[in-house]
Image (tube, rainbow, N blue to C red; front, side):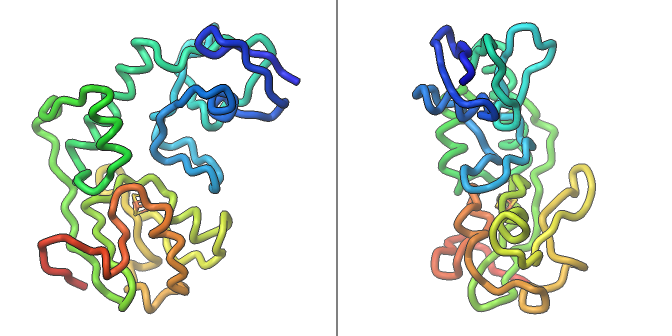
Length: 213
Ligand code: SF4
């Protein structure tokens, strides 16, 4: 067993546990965005970073294992500043109106609109190409959960993938084909894990704009 200290609280856990899991076992909540408990942690969003004594940089708690005697701060001023900045950047380039978990985090960290005033919002046509799902990638935060669930983590369909670079980095299908022309089996797992309302069932779709192919 490993003993460490999280926010000065002694926590004992098994070797191989991540800091995030150790904190949650002790009732300490660390915010996260891309992490989903049923999926392989991708360590992408950096919202779960923590301060570890002796480490020069903040470490993503979802992919950092515990060590004996480790001293961790999950809510230090430096950590809060980083989380707030990540949320501000996301908020300025993405429509987060249907991302309830992120709305709660933005309120908690006092996200101010407009700190990155010149940022362009990502604006993609709504994809309405099948009888079951609507894909509205203007709301996508590129957390990657849908790609993971569609591939090795659950479904092994490989219908979804990432495309583009930098600002244009986005979720797509191979050759950007409509979903019915891919290996998608319409299992619905991607909708289940999407935190931002980018993937919704046709029934739930509530946007006012007209859907396009
Ligand atoms: S569509 Fe949803 S699950 Fe997929 S990357 Fe975007 S926000 Fe994440």
